[in-house]
Length: 170
Image (tube, rainbow, N blue to C red):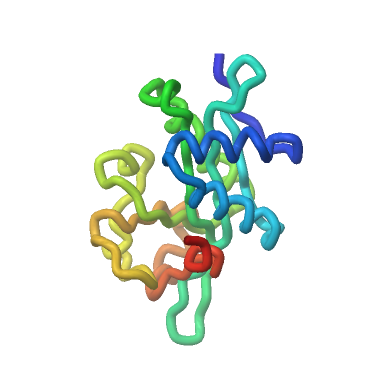
């Protein structure tokens, strides 16, 4: 049985192993480590099975800037599940648990760059529908947003910016 819970300090090595095995290189693991060191405002969840970490998801602060207005929300990135546990719904459980936790703290939005065939099932849609564009050149259908606060929907247009660690790693 899978348990989804908040990451604890003792999970660091297990989380690194998930990313290294899932992506066949340490880039995403290094990103998670840097974000942990430099940001206090993270939501990190692990999927655990039989006392083994088999999946991880990280949400970190992001902003949407328009003229003199800035709205802070979160970015979903990265997420990984050990290869032998993929296609069992673990990633979906991590995404859903993260969305629910961010709703509880009244986060206005979540952005991500991801597979357009996967994330719409959670309510994500192309960010361009709201006039939101990424600070990076990414395909329109891959840069998505989930609006969690309908009252801030009209303020959500402009340039979405991730934390600097996303461009520093690699």
